[in-house]
Length: 493
Image (cartoon, rainbow, N blue to C red):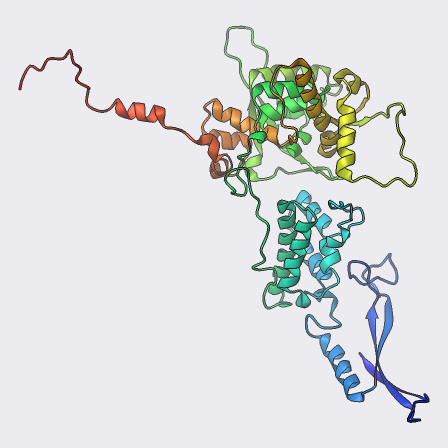
């Protein structure tokens, strides 16, 4: 509880009178960068917390008493000067996350990452850190009752101005909104201040509808898939081929094990129609470096995916070389590390200005793309006991393969180049486009792609199913009355 201590200090003023100070003193918890109290014993975080004494001086006794009363009353209402621990946003976020028992480990990990302090945050276009724009840095030490809609709107604008993608901004905002909505349910807030905040729109190439894939660069031809596969070192050329001809998500490919490949027995009759093999999708791989296997994204994501004949033969050859092909629980695609090349060229010296991560990543990708496929394979150290981590694969293998494929196309002056900014997920979109071109019905595509509903397939790939109705109108016209030609003579009338 706050209390007042009156002190009389003798000071020589022009009127020669002593000065009386009324000090309001109170105790409060010592807090970390997230606004959370620091325990006295770090081994017992729920125990007694570190505290410090604060004070504020007043010349007027009535003013001191009013401030003292405000401090004491603030302990019992949200948004005050001193608040209970469950009314701080950081504590409300912890309580909200703990109550979400419905979350999968991967989703929980993403929320924990968003709600944790950022030390190595990405830099903006001017090279400045964006760590101060994280959720906890912005709202962690604030009482939930003191957070306003204007503060949240300004935070959203700051994220956008720092160059964050609309999807990144929206994802962070929705986490804040869910935490504050739980505070409303718990009686800490009357209304949610995150409501009615203007968000950046996720515009697409043509339609402007969020979630619709209508960018031509997201779809490859079968020839382009082949050139990308040829520019990718073994065994990851098999992974690229499988992504384009099975439509599996990156996490689903990482979760594949040897036992998930169901190959039919070789047929005796070479003229018989080949039976399709299938991939069993039962798990995904967490994107976190320490994360393990997780359940698929949705209920419909747990499925069996049929494979075309060329993919079946490629998998047969691949498993023949797989050192753990007899172990059904072995990762289908191994983890890897790149051996360091011999040092040559310029070396960064102390005092150089550090370059942004995006520029460094592009420079490294270009350096790896300059290697031939055979030279790159010589630098790969494969770990067949661990699964491929998509983030490592994307930076060290996929992006250089895209650049290498375009270099080969330019040197040979034949073929069609790949989109320079091609993303790995474009291979999944390519698979759907190939299925549509092959005449496979939307319901079957939805089942194969692992969409929870066929409406998802029809909405995300709406433009792929556009039809000029030529065949339908021809069939409808055939049902009309016969046309009377010039060589037909009427018998009557």
